[in-house]
Image (cartoon, rainbow, N blue to C red; front, side):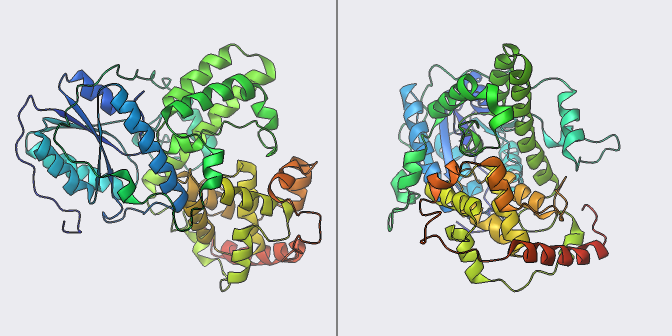
Length: 476
């Protein structure tokens, strides 16, 4: 292993050699275009997952994401074995691992579903070039988005920077394709090939084991994802439009981590929801449309990432580079991370995050606004914390959401919009159900006093924003 991502060309393969399916963020058998193509090729099939955290530019996974990945791979391995196949695990530079595995297998074809980060695309392009030059079939597929980023453009040929016209352009065209069925059986091509033991990757926390809350909160895997979708469509979809902003209610889909890891595809969600919508009327039908629009926001985030690959580290609106962040207040950051700010909704959200690896979307906005605009802490600090603690942290939606709240991103909320956490609590959790679920000591002497004055900090944030206005920020 060189550590550079470079790899020697694989040996020419037999035209009738087995097919290799390279899995990444698509840990499912159903609606997996790469797997469908491999099966249709008519040769034995091998599935491989490569844990690559060392190729240049690849962002290492956060702790909660690593926990989820372990469970998801365990589930997928069992599902694959049940239909006669095998999931192989390898770790290292993906380019080198795939090239070596092609030689070991004598593969005639390699298939995968596309990724959209710049570093990931660089790895995939290099692999495809080497395979093709060696006479090996190499094809990538659209398996993770409804619409490919290069297909949705403004009339001027540029990427969209505002959601509403973006989504209109998406939905005014042909509808998303129908999902592909899962294969009923696989002809195993992995005989004699070695696989890493999943436990050797040490994805699960051990010293200490902090994942008890995650295990209680989530069922992981493709079957669990399908069950979550069915439950949502049957029980919560009709009230989604009216109750989705109330964190104490069971009105959201809880599909985001399943989507992030590809245990379910957006095409499966789209078509199942569309079928359900046809049986609804009035407000319930509107709720279904609203839910599909939220799926559209995920699409938008990935399209933005495709065109702005440094989304997690650089302001999309370059004028925000002028924002005068004060020196980092470590004590304030820690209070926010631990859910001990003295503001009930913020603290409830941060404790829900630590316990379950997730947080209600409305509360995500409130906690992010508090960090950025009341504590005057750079949005990148919050993005990194969420990256480490969210089971659904992905390279697009996570930084996109933080930049949206900060005002520096695409279609962002204006910086002068500051979410008052007390007003938000009164409006969306009026009976303090969500607060009491997560902050049992709230309302007692054990609960901490507020660490800042909301009015003073709001005024300070708006004063700092004047420097951004002076810099005349424009979209990148």
